[in-house]
Length: 241
Ligand SMILES: Nc1ncnc2c1ncn2[C@@H]1O[C@H](COP(=O)(O)OP(=O)(O)OP(=O)(O)O)[C@@H](O)[C@H]1O
Ligand SMILES: C[C@H](N)[C@@H](CCCCCC(=O)O)NC(=O)O
Ligand SMILES: [Mg+2]
Image (cartoon, rainbow, N blue to C red; front, side, top):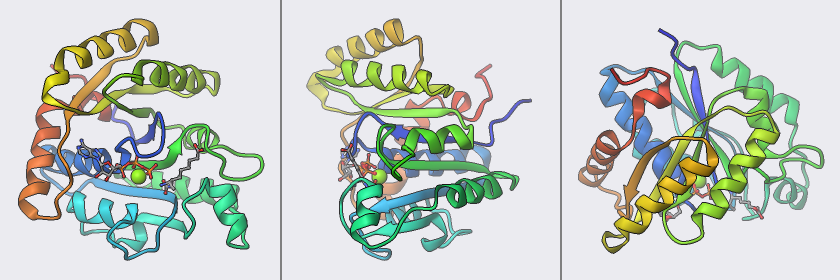
């Protein structure tokens, strides 16, 4: 049995649904495993403050249902301006210490847990004057889960992300197409087919448009939706029988 230690969730862009999908996968995996084995980490978030309901750290905590970590344990660096982390840090009068972030990641990954790590924006987003999100993913050496929009334009964005990931030597676990509307099903299936054909990757799930509601009922429904529609076994490194 060759289980992965976690996955690194990136996107074809900011705002594609990485956080919503990340907490849904965490909750669905907890349901599937039947025990508390999942942990979440957002190394750097920008444009928010810890404790605000819009912060990724809060949404990851609330949506995953994971209570063995506090919200503040799910994030390392929080920067108030909604900018690429390098510039958000500079505007805040600080620098992101890339090596410290990598060491913290390695420490976390040495624990016997499954870690879901969410980047900021896409792979080409600067963390420092010398490092991109892709460099952090490379140092952490986790398979990449690419979250992409489902509709028109996503094939181009996803193939470019795949190409860049390969250039950086990253392993790709697969792609999730997120947020399709009912009248788009045929188009989304074609998008998945084109991404698999030209990208040489698997589309591991196609998720519907389901606007976030902060109720227990909604979070349970989202986790169930992900449990039914995403190939979780492939993500954690256990092939489906
Ligand atoms: N399947 C979906 N259905 C409806 N709304 C969605 C869906 N996925 C994401 N959203 C909404 O789209 C917005 C952006 O999603 P999210 O914050 O998860 O993106 P992100 O990729 O994590 O962005 P960032 O780069 O800031 O981390 C949020 O308001 C979220 O609730
Ligand atoms: C402000 C955004 N929400 C996001 C940072 C996105 C940077 C995008 C930069 C770019 O691609 O031009 N921050 C975050 O994920 O915490
Ligand atoms: Mg996010």
